[in-house]
Length: 116
Image (cartoon, rainbow, N blue to C red; front, side):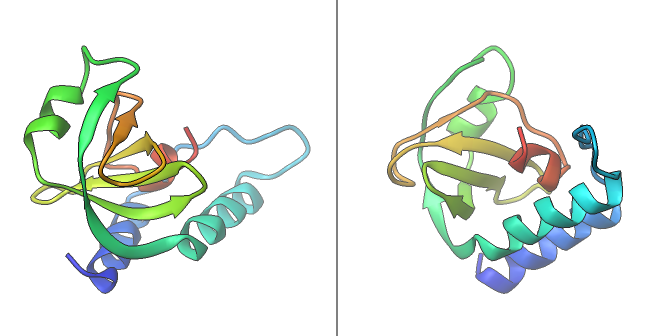
């Protein structure tokens, strides 16, 4: 995967809509734009990620642990992850892409996962 493919995958996800909880005092549209801008400003050249643990392992942890996973955005210790062969996203945490703990959940909503 390369950066252009990562951007395309996120854009495809956005075209299907994003589920966000809108903070009081903001419109959904303004909040979506802010979150989307932040995400696009933190897209990286994808690197293969190693998922080592999950906060909620009973959900999608095994799927990510056994699959080829790409880290496609990074902000501090937060990583947006995507599966190599599926348009599926998850949020992970760690100092580097080779030692990621994920929440344990995933979906086709890149923005929703990024905001989790």
